[in-house]
Image (cartoon, rainbow, N blue to C red; front, top):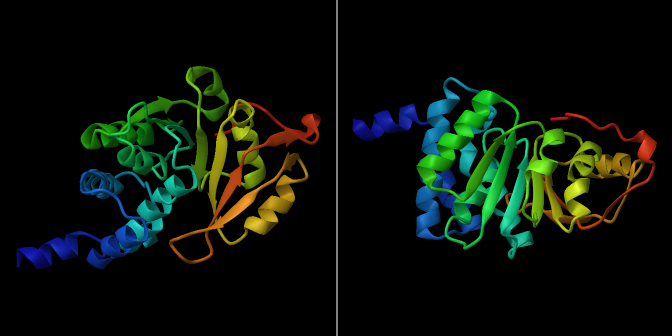
Length: 232
């Protein structure tokens, strides 16, 4: 009876975790951190919409594994900044995986106070390598004192806007990694109207039509066409 009750109370399919960790293997300690994070997310999801409810049965593959795959693109990166962290994808997942890496830190930037509170609690219960910033993206550049190795974002904004958000960090030596869906080609076409970029596309390990857009260089094509300010 207890097992049946647990299955009813949790919308996550038990097999989904095994599938996700087969796609993106992690250590047992990282797995334990991610389990605590997922449990907290499901608890908060009842009162705060952190992920689309329709994705909950496949939370591990759709969100956790999708986030973990970024580590394979930038395996030596230690300092990350995750723009518009929301429910913690990919930022909290990356911070869990990097928890035992000396010098690692993931800056989680979120302007919604409730979501920022969730991110702080997630960092606490997982002992993840994370720093939460309750701020808009336009205010964060000067707050990050250390060099950033990677800047990322997921389900935040169209690509041409993301490139603008990332440009100050990439200009200082960071790599940008953006998780995008099947419309990536159209978004790249739009982005090149505003930016000189040389994107590298990586097909998502989690299947479907997902992509990782990797950028090492960003230059403004027409500075007057870029709008600055608190954009996220």
